Amino acid sequence: MLTLEEGIALAFASSTGMYPAQTKHAQESRKLAERGAEILSRTLFWAELTPGKIQLLVRVLARRSANGRGIRTAEYMCDVLYSIANWLREEGLIPERAAMPRKNWKGRLREEWDPLTGVGPAVNRPRYSIHETAALFRALPQADPRLALLLDLAAELRIGQALRARRSDLVLDAAGGFGMGQFVVHGRIKKPGETVDLHPELRERVDAALTSGYLVAAEATYREQAISNYYLFPSGRMKNGRATVEQCTERHLGLTAIRKMFRALEARAGVEHRPGRGFYGIRRTATDLAPEFTSDSRVLNRLTGHLNSETRERVYQDRAHELVRARAATVRRDMRRYLDLRRSSRPTVREWLDRFGL
Image 1 (cartoon, rainbow, N blue to C red):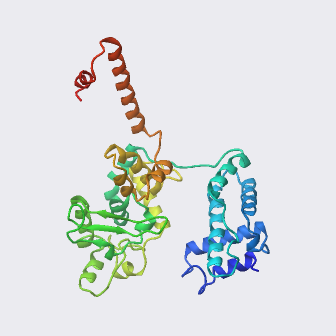
Image 2 (cartoon, rainbow, N blue to C red):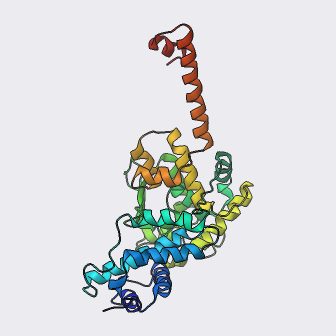
Image 3 (cartoon, rainbow, N blue to C red):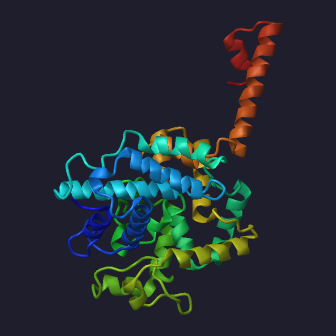
């Protein structure tokens, strides 16, 4: 029988484990799994990893938490352990029913966290106001051109996914809703990507970056077929506002570098830097603003790359956003006015609609 320690070692073996490469995600997952095994006992057998043991792990983490923080880490830790168990079962290394998760275990985890910590899970979802967002976009022409193009193309999407885009992800044929091309953002199973149709203004900015902007050298080499592909958002320092072909073919910008660029943009725009906003703050603002322009849930989900409306509405949207409050106030006033009219002269519905020009 396999112990937790042995199973984790097998799951993260470089050539035979559950991950094809030792990515940052794989390394972080292993750290979480090993931390969980340390709490429960590394010599615990996988067959003994019952829902009760997972519950014990959560309770230990909750008691160690500061101010209710750490619920996401606890959830990820349990998720990693269950993922390893699933892989071990598929490999026939542990019994078929070993380490099976309890139904709705994530919901139970969250229900337990609040009373155990006494303060509830800390949810920090700061966002920019509409005025701050407008100021950021006004300052965009003075920002690093890589950041400017990235936000033009994917401000409403997951920036980490968009950063990995290559030239082959930019379709400049007569495709998309405007017939002016598309920008493809690749995703994963739980975090899907998205395809952005280029509108005329966006196509103009893309063309400028390729023909006279920071990507001009790489684009010329690409069209000469001297290179097969290149990164649209290359890492490293640029000279005279342009990236070299070597830069564009070596690696894309990392999250640390792009966050520094964004902080510089905040400073130029006169917007206060607050931890937890950044690119997520822009995306959350988009989810608040978009319903003012369309009520089609399919469009709203495509705009921000969500699989369903529940996540977008529950996690990203702000119920108390200023536009929502203003619209609620307008509806409230119209309802009261309608009731007032009904009390006084009892007009018909048609008469009421005519009075308000509807």
